[in-house]
Amino acid sequence: MKLTINNLSFTYAGVPALSDVELEVGTGEVLSIVGPNGSGKSTLLKCINRILKPKQNSVLIDGKDTSTFNLKELSKLIGYVPQSSTSTFSFTVFDVVLMGRKPYIHWSLSERDNEIVADMLDFLGIGDLAMRHFNELSGGEQQKVIVARALAQQPQVLLLDEPTSSLDIRHQLEILCLLRRLALTKGCSIIVSMHDLNLASRFSDRMIIIKKGKIFASGTPESVLTEETIESVYGIRCKVTNSVLGKPQVVPLISDLPEETTLKMRPEITEKL
Image (cartoon, rainbow, N blue to C red):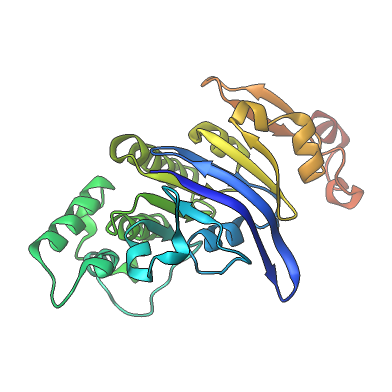
């Protein structure tokens, strides 16, 4: 399966949000999208998933324009995990994940639907939560349930919008390791927007950096995460070193931050940063 995006552009009330975006994602590949707040990361994911409609039909799956698919067909191909998911209803975890089977359900649930839900819960290591209520879970547990719901669609492409932004470091690593395993064992293509450059570097095959709605850099973490690129995109200086895993690691410097930001720091600390 290959996802192709050609010259994708989108505007909000006449204000450009994305301009001439082009990229390809292959089977079992993990692509991370990084960039400053408001650069267009979430908008790009929503355009791929047809939550938003770009100016022209420019998203292809295996060469076929996704605008020719109805929503049920598209839901079988693309899964989506939003930034946050809340429920005011007291659904069980099993019921929440079962919602991912909606594209396949006709008149009633089948035994296969129940089996797939159970398999997804086990795959993410949360089978013991099946009968717990979703709104009683921790943030990390809820995020795994939402990922399981998307996987219950059995998609070929999985889109995730900042899935680790509100999680502690343990749950961040658990979610990203699960995504990596999903790509390796099930051949699912993963596109994930992130803010943490070092986590993106560690878990991605390729990265793109978006600045003001345009792709500024694209390639492997080694080619994308350079000191010059980060300064151009984020407006800060940094040091890029190799981590123990051989991936680039970004260490931001603070000397370019506004004076009032660092005023209360002791000078000897500020100089080391």
